[in-house]
Figure 1 (cartoon, rainbow, N blue to C red):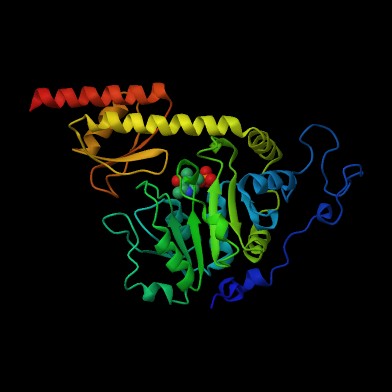
Figure 2: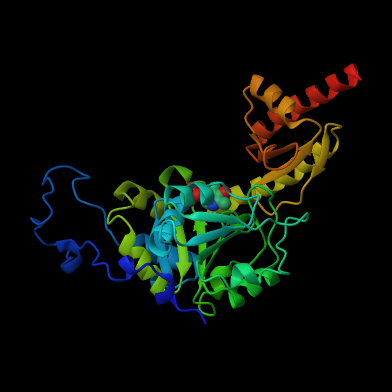
Length: 349
Ligand SMILES: *Cc1c(COP(=O)(O)O)cnc(C)c1O
């Protein structure tokens, strides 16, 4: 039923991608007079457009063959490239399951593609019932599913994702930006089974490398090849590739940091339950907590007065703040101020 050639845009299927002389001949000992580079300096050469060393390491770390790995300048770039490769502006559509990550809507709008919101239910899960109008619609090319979801924090039930993968004729993009904080097995283990599956991950969250903009897509080779066709040739700088390689070679730091963040999450959760201004703390498989409070906007402003910045999600979810788990010191500052606000409320009422 799934046929990638029916999904990809015609102009991308027939595109001859940019090719440099370096694609045709690569040998470290060669004299390179092909790319109009400057012969002097340290970063005078263009970066490796195929990011081979980094891809090799990511392939080992994630246990996904290199041919199934695509790298972007952050996963935000990959989201944009998915629209570019698979959605004809003003003609094709995409679906998100909201409330969710804001970049799907921004990227859809930039690419002039209509984004349909398939709302999550009260438990922030997908309602599979009565979805044939979405799954059978040939104009819908992409469905974005964020799991663990931002900003709700929960994992989407694997059974509903499985159902969508089996019944949708387009690409199912599972954004796993927070998967390293959860116990959930990555969907990247299933790419052989599902040619319409694209798994997004990033070095921005658990790996602590948001500044170097490295996003990953794991998918069938055919999808990876189309993404390679549409990406800017040198989308990941030499410096960023180097920094990523260095971190991936030393995963100990990453593992330790994740452990600290997870134990801090438990502690912050515990402390928040003691506050009267806290109404609900939603279950989180990520490095943040979605917290419903008595009055999100007032509390948000009070925190800002103390230079404590959390994310006010009141517009999306009534009276909800999204609180990132920081260092123990940062968390302490936040909890202290929340306690102040709580005590004051006591005095007023
Ligand atoms: C933070 C986040 C990303 C990360 O994007 P990068 O461009 O890789 O930094 C992707 N998806 C979701 C849902 C996120 O919350």
